[in-house]
Image (cartoon, rainbow, N blue to C red; front, side, top):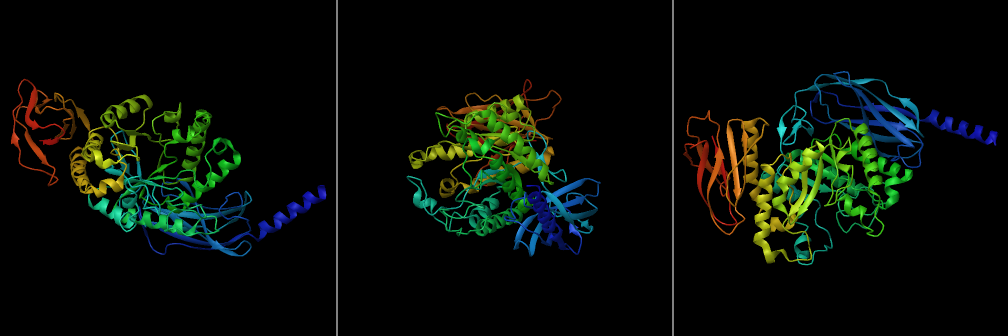
Length: 548
């Protein structure tokens, strides 16, 4: 037995000795700060599967201008075990100055080769960098610029066979519902943040066949080339359009039973899935957030008689969030989502930056929900999905006006609530077909003015509005007031308490929803400390003012 062990380690040593980094090719000129730097590494190594870090693992180890050490996972591109193979690194410098780096290759968990040191200098910035949390109201880019997401779910492209009872034909229009059309349309209307899914029919990077989507082709490779290329393309679209994604990564091509959350083998597989995603797309400012799951509570209760213990799911999130933070040198925001059932402890996982849930048939509850969860858990809160109706067995055209009104007011409730991303409507095909995508221009215009005048500062202000649902915020020297009337009677006035120091009559300018502009207006003098704005707010209508 001893002789067998000796022979095994002798063979392993021989293989490791043959493994080496052969060459490194990097940028030959300055890399713009916040711009992409590409590196190609040629190495020889042996493996059964180069996508498993336990067998073959290449890291780029950088020293930033500040002296901080960064470790960037690299990804396998092509080549055979035992001969020359090509690997790649994609890096975005977030600091000014000189970076130095080496590449380190490990095989079977043992370091076997390190490249000579290289370096590059950063040039003038291009863009603003990666998004991070800032406060409950805003995110911020690397350069400190505040950001708020004007957002929508655009989770997937058309499927070959859609499961909608009433809108199957609409949803299957591939020339209309693809990212080359939907993302430019959304960005052109002012949208700057959306949610994308990785699942069996959308970006199925580790799935070999059965996609229900003709955009993907069968492959025996561990990572499906057609799916990888499609996500490459979508990320580049986001970069060019200025749209940031909440990328819902899901479980990959794995079953999400209890074993998924507790089995060492299942967790190792998922770590490799995450590592590949970070290595290939983590460089991109278009990645606004990593999302682990869509509605993890529905996965928990898929078997109603034998639900997965919440403690195991929460422990999995704690472990995977910490791992994701450890391999992402860019510091992207990390989140997950629930449908409607909280899992004890999930909202307090240390390495989860933002909490979120999905709300249907209860849009009026969103402002209170956001505030309540933020007070309870000390983190920003996002409504990842909302709509008037969730049940796709119903014909939405039977209550289309209700769907439209809910779509609109949900966005405004977000703009006037302490959330860094507006609530994200579901049913993107339906609302596009209803002609509502241009409505995002209204929200984006007001959002930009709030950020401009408040420089990222938002101060809620009480509003007296009778039966209307009304909100107001002060952003620097401007105040913004929104009201929606859900009642059957018109509302005639909005009352806003004003500071005693305000001696002059402020100008109250109404918003033209058709032109997406504040237009006209008049000065109104406060009386008894209250600014009273006469309105004629009809039932089921909305109104918006800028006060300056």
